Length: 114
Image (cartoon, rainbow, N blue to C red; front, side, top):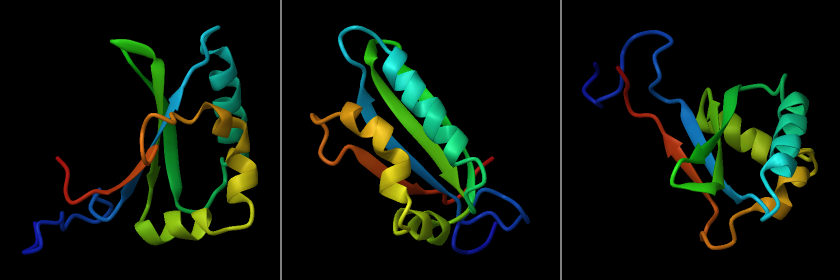
């Protein structure tokens, strides 16, 4: 480990970024959220810097779902976020954004990992 607290191992998680975006499933079920998530994930498959993503659900609140994506760096995420295709590509999930959360997303930088 370096003096900054970051992992010194090549390929370690330090410097990676996790992005969480909260959504609410409609009252009639999670199927439309799953369909939108799968469509977006296929479209993002070759996005530079995107290491992967998952759709997570809270066991105590099955209507609350989170898209968690992992990026190689903050610069990679910001480059994609600023790109022309960002808003178009993610549009299918936008109607499900959790409007009770402000903001409905969180960007977290990985400091170290084990």
